[in-house]
Picture 1 (spheres, helix red, strand yellow):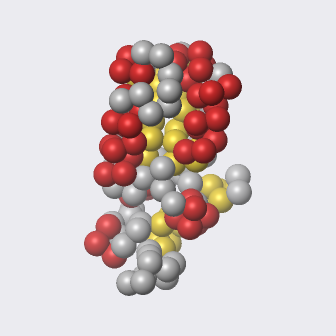
Picture 2 (tube, rainbow, N blue to C red):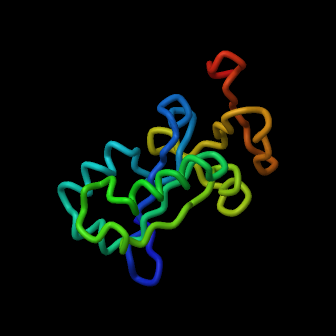
Picture 3 (tube, rainbow, N blue to C red):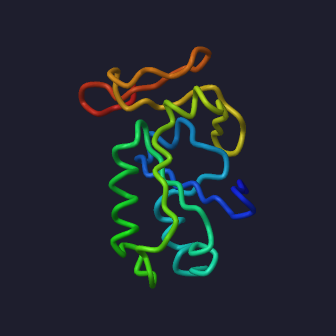
Amino acid sequence: SMQQGGRDVILIDVRSPPERAVSTLPGALDQHSFAALAREEPERVAAAVLVPFCTIGFRSGLYCEWIRGGGLGMAASSELDVRNGEGVVLWSHDVGTFVQDGAPVRSLHVYGSAWDLAADGFDTVTFGPAGHLS
């Protein structure tokens, strides 16, 4: 797993299943898996740096606030180290590693054409006007 200053970093992909199916970040959990981890290993979650992410950072920002506001049902939620990982679009420029079923891929879902700003060398996928993958 990722580490920062010797602490675990837990990546949480807050995007929809169709978006996650295209690709996600290595080791990232979906919201359901993360909530289960918080229930089963609250001490691990409390000690970690929590990094929700989405496409450009809006949905993950809302999820950060939800966590800080006690959404996970954990004690001292406001003291959790939650940082908005922003989005896969920026990650494509900074790190450039995506996986699909654990295997590296060079594609990412950018939600809509307005956010189709991924780094060169990536195949991007968007939702069509009716909300379907295109």
